Length: 367
Image (cartoon, rainbow, N blue to C red; front, top):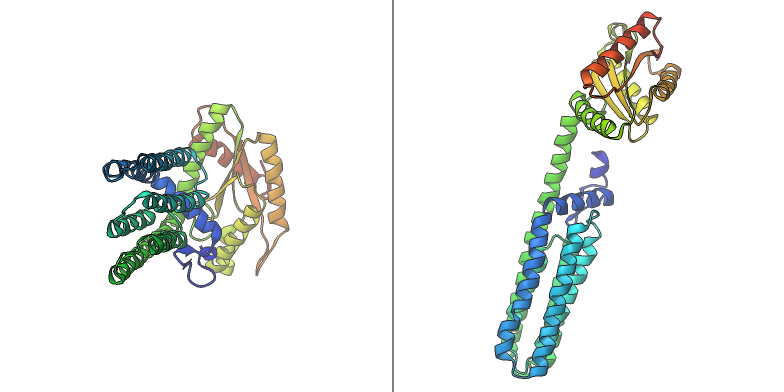
């Protein structure tokens, strides 16, 4: 968790400072709200297109009406394309740029349609800008990008209006600017608060998950998480007819260490040993504290002889390490391989039996 809270506050401008964490959060957020995002995209596309109905009654020029119909049809088509991209995407972070680009395109489309009206109503068009701004802040986008898109459509519209609405009183024009700015400010504040507390909640969820799955002393997986990972890997191994090896080991004479040096030193040994093993494992390997000084390992896609060779290397790394205050520490290991339809208890029982064979054979051995 330390990396996520580095550089002061973890959240800055509505985002995590840690870019990897921000990407992880955004992917999780979109995945969680994928149905909402898809619904909003379709709703915006259909609603934007259905405005062709008032266009039909308000526009007398056939060419202008056909241009608007084409414009609205293109936007609907683009939003349908984005809908399917979101639906099929597995990496959601890139959608940030898609959402922003679409918001800009829809803003330009809105201004283009307003330009086709021979006598547009300034206040109705200004109300349309407010609606677009509200929709922009409904989309799961980066907070800064949402503000940029909202300002883009607002400034673009008022530049357009300054040239096209020559008969609009200055007071009315100014009032529209103030009202739209109020909408942007209030939407920005609301969006920032939502973004901030969503990220705080995400950090809390990660913390709770870590506490539920990780051993509080060593930081590696606990027994409950190990059981869950074994069930997943055993099922995969059975389906693919693959190998799966399990190792159980503990620290030799650990009670003597606690009795002679105290439990704080014993805890320091457990932490250091877990760190040694963790650094010498592959990312796919599973490492957990089973309880007390006992640890367990899972080596996916690895047959018995390979597991024995890797375990032997781990034994040597531990035996060669000089632990603070107490010097050298050794471990005894028992290795077993998963067999078809076998639950964790049976595999661990064989590994545990071999662990005690290693103890009886003089300790500091792999059996």
